[in-house]
Length: 370
Figure (cartoon, helix red, strand yellow):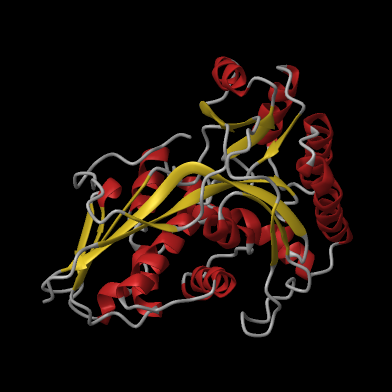
């Protein structure tokens, strides 16, 4: 066992401002990294050990069988479970990201300990699992001295979640958490998922300076959901050629491209109008859900220029745009949101943290709300 110093990496959650989920269909997405992060620490250990601190999970890896992924409850099985049982079943999957990264990196025989914890609530539509995966990939890359260009890094992270973890996912989460900031991402010619060495890399444009003031609010519906389960039906309909889904995805990408100028000019009323239009398109094909539709409508009644789902839909979180984000964050909780907070600046992307960063105690409660 070595005496190396620990390596700690973190990556932010993200919120989709415009265009999502057209990143799965060759579209364009404008998204911003949020000031809540996932963390992974790597340090020497007698044998491979994986810990999810905020889920109170601790696994010493004795064989390759220990790196098999825990099955996540889905579909009818999840629907039949009570909230507590479903939460416990999902908690058991929290080590899946670390298992998948260790396997993908060929590190099963490493004498290391990986600890993860997160400020990004699971199932909130804020890219909690992708942020954790990106942080884990950066931490392990650093540990084995592997340097990867950012675009290739984002693609590799997505490939791990899609191919190794079997999660239906697009590309924006991995690019947004890797690059950080408020960015426009063009995913043209990436709709058919031919593979990271065949499909073109995304085009990533930072739209505003890192310290630019933002008028955003993230509000949680109070309902957790699995993003892969949410995306899968729409993806199946798109593959089968459903004209409504295909038209909606084209429209969502077009709205994001047209609104890029308004974001650059901080023309927030125009951006809000684009958000409303985008939400109508995704709601029309069943991609948002009644609880999301109700909360977006409430945000607009409270004076938001616009509001829409921030992630996969059918629960999770909405993003709203308001002249007084702090006021809206307080007030929308009084009008039905489970929780809310303003986002006044976009967060930086994946990065290394100080090796002596304070690590939460084992068994600390995981966040349940934004």
